[in-house]
Image (cartoon, rainbow, N blue to C red; front, side):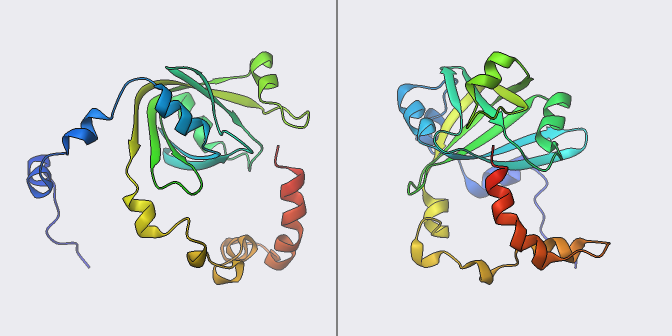
Length: 206
């Protein structure tokens, strides 16, 4: 099926939506002020978007506490914890240092956005600052802030993300094992993977 009535022109797009609300422009600043800092430090989770030679990537990051450390009004840092070693985010940063972050605070409708430029460090001093239970991350990502602004709560209100009565049970969606088995080209046991995954995750969090 061919998509019809496709918008291909910025003037057409802007005519359709009209001008941005003045306060939606004014809330964007080029540094982290005290109020934005308090919001960011309350966020244990963020999505990290990058772009590189291999394409785009958007990856989740989470911590037990603030997901980033704020160094100053123009600088934040976060640890790259243990994962699957795809290294999509880090590969992209090496090729193109543009980065975008979206912060979520449990129970809060607003989200916070930071756009900036990233670099990857293996400085021992920095790694030790992010140690958990004696375990160091392999790298620390530093972001130089260029834009900061918050997003209103409409998306989270519409989705009901924080409403307990809208939370699904694990059996309502395919498990990790089921999804891996569906894409595997070898003899993969999805049920066994699921049975072993929880203790493995706990052991490999940091």
